Image (cartoon, rainbow over all chains, first blue to last red; front, side, top):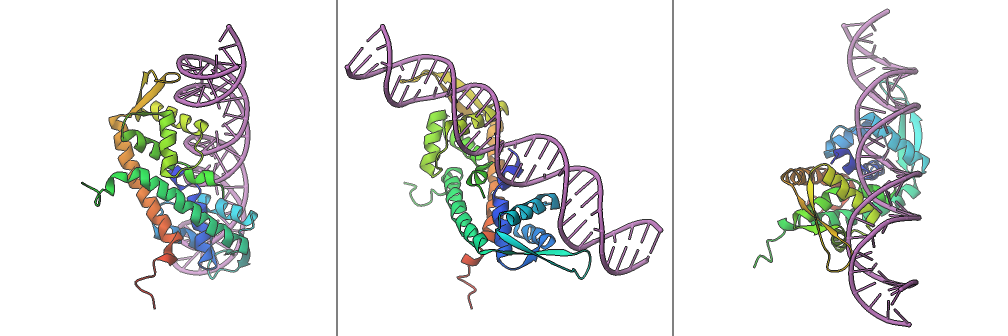
Length: 114
Length: 114
DNA sequence: ATTACTACTTTGCATTGCTTAGTAGCTTGA
DNA sequence: TCAAGCTACTAAGCAATGCAAAGTAGTAAT
């Protein structure tokens, strides 16, 4: 029961959602993920996600100088990416609801408890 | 953005949770998953999960005749499995909360609007 | 010049869902 | 009897993805 498996797919959707909130770059995205509660998202985890999203035309890239350090790659979502994000949210909601039904079934017995 | 990836890890925890609700067998578990809202969980998806849970000593198996059809393998959770399930629920809640923060941040603006 | 911080890249591995195909017991009807 | 159809489990092989580890570079400060 590896923790990593729970992230699969979810991470990609979350990264897309973060970029949808405003143009941003890799390092900043890692910070946003950690601030939301995700722990230990390394660079080796995030950057392949960005590469994939870019390859699939869901985000697009623009290079710009950083005030400190090397060149940054700023990302924004494409219209196709926005569609995908909406679709993802829908599917995630479905699965999360199904999982909650099973996992937390015993915690919702407040109202029909005989 | 494959739908299958969203299931990773979640499925295993859900199967464990279903068995924890009472002794059951493969075919019945598939029914329970579909009833909870999971779509198209095939046998080739479920049985490897059961094999893995068994190998990891989280569930144990008992063979018994079926009123119709071949012998069934009835599963129950071990004490170790119960611990794992509790741990899984905790981790799932954390990740689900983090994901919701990012994905549905814009939907919770009822109280500090304007 | 060395250290440290920012920022992105690359390689390779392990896990896991899924497709497909196969085995096997039981019941029913022609 | 024997084929069809249901129940029930098994097995082989593929693809996607998170992740660890190591590397490349630019800038700044000591």
